[in-house]
Length: 196
Ligand code: ADP
Ligand code: MG
Image (cartoon, rainbow, N blue to C red; front, side, top):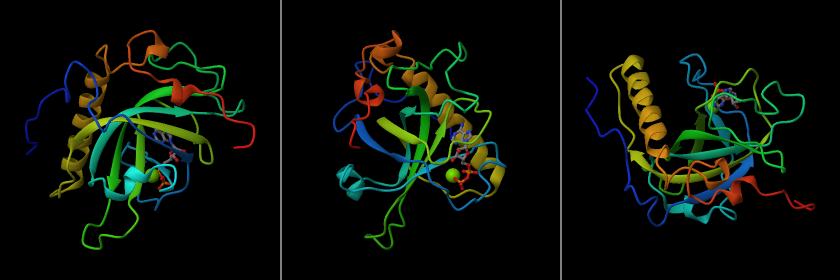
């Protein structure tokens, strides 16, 4: 049975410290554990403590926020079209999407590198392995749980997606750059420096 939980997380005044947290990298292959077969593909990012030192001691769990992708011109989802409403393509070539993500750490071995997996709340016609992805993590949704079966897991993730969408659909959580909110998303949409 799914545990009832609030439909939004966080205050109406916006993300609270230490959020929003940032990280970025190129999408890599995961374990191919079949998350796509569950209807929940997750774009994996390598962990880089230099650019995201906060990852070293953040707890495992489900988080949410905004993702930006720099899709190549050959990708069918680039340039972002009119639907769904939340994408914005900046001069830098990055488009933003709401996301839920898991940060998974085997807490038994406390110095293992966590895994970072991001499910973007958008339909993509094709994969985007190798594409530059930036994350603005606005808050924590829940801890990891054990499930009796895969249906319960999927049900819980659907609720996470709902919670993320509703939570991000508030003025102080929506991005200024999309014209729908006041949250500063300039880091997500900035131009990539020449030498990066
Ligand atoms: P892997 O184990 O390689 O991460 P997944 O089954 O989790 O495989 O699929 C992830 C891949 O699916 C991503 O790297 C990305 O290229 C693609 N993908 C397509 N749609 C989405 C989406 N909405 N969110 C995340 N990844 C997606
Ligand atoms: Mg994955």
